[in-house]
Length: 336
Image 1 (tube, rainbow, N blue to C red):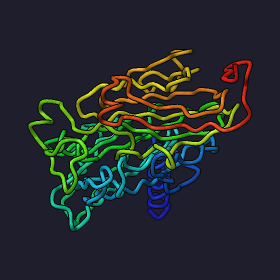
Image 2: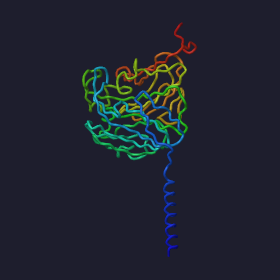
Image 3: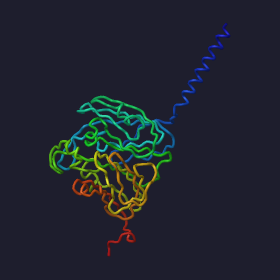
């Protein structure tokens, strides 16, 4: 009897162990766990050098705050982590990503997040409805490499986006992207204010203007002048510059152009592979992105613009890239 019981117990242990092994074999193995480096535009996190999958924690906080839309013009922005656009997120294809979203206790409304890099209902929006003072979280697999928009998707979605709740997430390919000298984060957005462009004081959101898709401001990186003059992007002659460019919309298509430069390579629609070479202007739809690479060969000031040109001149959808270094008279000669 004792021998029979011993055999029975041993068989149970072996069976359970085998089941655990089978169940465990379906779980991905992660060699490391880390907290994502998050950067404020125009900065980009460091290139991912590891070549294995990891568990990555991303921490975002919905914050409603008053800031400057232009000199003398105030606006109550709705933000991720206090900046417009929200922080740049960088992960690797195959990573398991846990998104932690908190909503500041002083927020007036609930917020959530829809990441276009997520495969699942609402890009995470349905499980991250977060009231002021509360937190939510979910985990997703980064299945598809590319550059993706994320934004708040709480109804009315357009209002949350127009108030500044958007950003970019890069899912690097298995072997990463080609090495470049400089990387920058640029995101276009629209602001619909009751006052006209430049009208001083506190400006409120204009819902009718948003319905008509007639923004008072179309800007890069959340405010007028964010990439102008002392805030210009910096590079040197001979360097290859990569721009991660997003368009939050919520309504307009961007005709992104750099005056005096051609895009050597464009990763269309933010995909992980080059789709075009030697491009003058690339279209970026609302809720879309593009990766642009160019070697800067002549010193000087290069204007980044939405080439729907009245937006650039009259609504200030423009920035600067300052290129320093020796003259290249065989390419551009202004001494004649």
